Image (cartoon, rainbow, N blue to C red; front, side, top):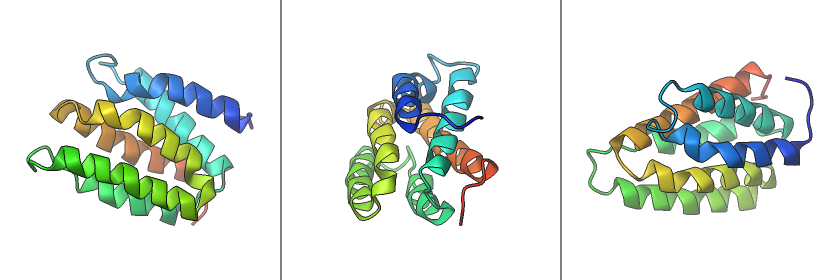
Length: 133
């Protein structure tokens, strides 16, 4: 993926992320895959480290629809992302993307699982594009 304007790339992602997280609207995962790829590229270009991503990813992996408090934990994730992006401003764009996706993620078990898969794919693409440790 060639170097692109980070702001333009973020705006593309924000327009598509709700569809990407919703398996009913993106049954074959085409939008999911493209948005995860764009997000991984954006984070690499923003100099986000693998370690910073993995800290958030660890929180997301723990989410389970069997946990009756998972919707609360998604809201807590939003607050933790705000704190983290306050400490590491290069994560602000990712915070905005996550904030856009969270209302879809909390709809049901399928959307939560897609949200978790999205995080995993973003981490993978970030690494693919040469994201640093």
